Amino acid sequence: MITGQPDHRKQTETLRVRLAEAEKMLQGEIDALVVEGTGGNQVYTLHSADEPYRNLVEQMQEGAVVLTLGGDILYSNARFAALVGEPLESVVGSRVDRFVNASDRDDVEVLLRAGSGRRRSSLIGPHAGAFEVSLSLTTTVSGNGDRLNLIVTDLRELLEANSSRERAERESRTKDEFLAMLAHELRSPLGAISNAVRVLELSHAEGDAATRAHEVIARQVGQISHLINDLLDAERVVSGKIRLNRQPLDMADAVRRAVAPFGGDVRLARHIDISAEPVWIDADAVRIEQVLSNVLTNAVKYTPSDGQIHVTLHGDGNDAVLIVEDTGFGVSPEVMPFIFDMYVQADRTLDRAQGGLGIGLPLVRRLVELHGGTIVASSAGEGQGTTFTLRLKLVPSIRTSSGVPLAPDRRASPRRVLLIEDSGDAREMLRMMLQLAGHVVYDAADGASGLELMNAVRPDVGIIDISLPGMDGYQLARRIREEPFGRDMLLLAMTGYSAAGDADRSLEHGFDYHLVKPVDLEQIARLLNEGAGAFEGTST
Image (tube, rainbow, N blue to C red):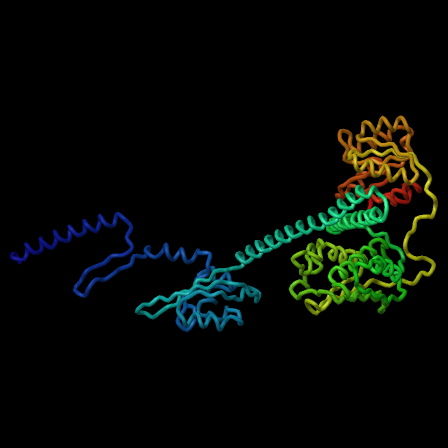
C-alpha cells in the first residue's frame, strides 16, 4: 500500500489539472464534449446545443418537413401544418402526397425519387383550396437511415405581387398607346384643317377649291368634336354622371338615320345593306344614336374596301334585336375577351390606318346597359369578320311620333348678345357666326370690360367663358344677376372642361345653361330662340 501512494498522488494531481482546464473551457459556450477512451472518442451533445437550430426551424416562415424515402412525414414544423390547415399531430405520420394537389402528385413523386432538387407545385390548403408553392428537397445520409428534407415556400404573396406589377405595366403600356393614338387622331384632322385654310388663302375663298376646303374643315372639326365628346362621355360613364332622357323611340328609324351618313360617303367603297322591321323601344334618342354610330363606325373602320356590312333589326319575343355583321378584319381570340374594355382595340396595322382611341365600344356597352340591354361581339378569328348583337326591351308601337325630339320650326328672333371670351380667335369666330345668324353681338375679352359693356348696352343674352382672367365667369354671372336688368337675362356658360358637378356649379352661380366647348351653333341658336326654360342642364 505504501509503495502505491506516489501513483495515487500523481493521478490525483493530473485529474486536478484537467478539471481546471475543463472549468476554464466551461466559461464559454459548449455545444458538446469529446471524451477520449480506450474504445475511441465519444461525443456527448449538450441539451442547449441544438436549441437555436430547432427554434430556427420551428419559427421560420417556410414550411419544413422531414420524410422517409417512401414519403412518410417524420417531422413537420408549425408553418407547414398551418399551410395545409391541419393540426400538427395529424400531419406527422401522414404521407406527404396527401397534401399535394392531385394534378401535381406525379411530379412530386419524381422529385422525391431524385432525392434533391426544386419544383413548383400546388398543395391543398384549408377548405380544399389549392395554392402554389415552391418545393426544395435535400437528402441527409446517416447511419440511422437516409432522410428527405423538404422546404415548402408559399408563393401566393409573390404571385400576387407579380400579378399587380404585370397589371401596372400593362396599364402603363395601354396608357402610352392611348396617348400616342390620341395624338395621331388629333394631328390628322388638324393637319387637314391647316391645309384647307391654306387652300382658302391661295384661292381667295372662291371657286371649287374653296368649297372643297370648307367641306374638309367642317368634316375634320366634326371628327375632333366626336373624339372629344367620346372622351368626355367615357369619363361620365365611369363616374356614373350620364342621365338618360328616355321616351318611346322608333328603333328602325334610328337605325336608318345612323346608317345614312355612311351610305352617302362614296369614299368608303363599302356596301351597307339594311333590313329593319318597325320596333319601338324606351330610350334616350341621342344616346341610342351614339351607340349606333359607334358600332357602325367600328364596322366601317375594320372592313376593307369592297367589303360588306349587313345591318338587321327585328323583334324577338320581348326584345328588339339589332345585328351588325361585317366581312372585315375580324378579331383574334386573344383580343376578343377584352374588346369592350377601355382603350383596347383590335389588332392594328403599323401605319395605324384603322385608328381610334379604344373608347367607343366600352362607351357603347355602358350606354346599352344603362338602357337595360345587352351587347355582345363574336368573330371566327382574324380575317373572318365581326358580328355585334344588341338587345333592348320592346315597348308598344307609337305611330304618331318619330320618337326624336325636334325643335319647333320657328324663325329665330334677333337678340342683343354680350359675348365675353378671352381667346381672340374663338371670340371672333363665334361673334361672326352669331352675326350671320342675325343677332347683334357685343364682345369683350375679360369680365371687367364685359361688365362695363353690359351696363352700356343692356343685352338680352350673355355668353360667358368660365375661365376669364381676373374676374372669372362665375363671379361675373353673380354680378349680372345683382343688377335689376340682369335678372331676366339668358346666361350661357362656356367651358373647355367637363368635370363632374360643373353644370350644377354653373346653375348655382346664376347661369341658365352650361355649354362644353366646342359649342354647337345650332344648339346656341335654339337657346337664343326659345330661351333657357326647356334646355336647362349640361351639354351632352
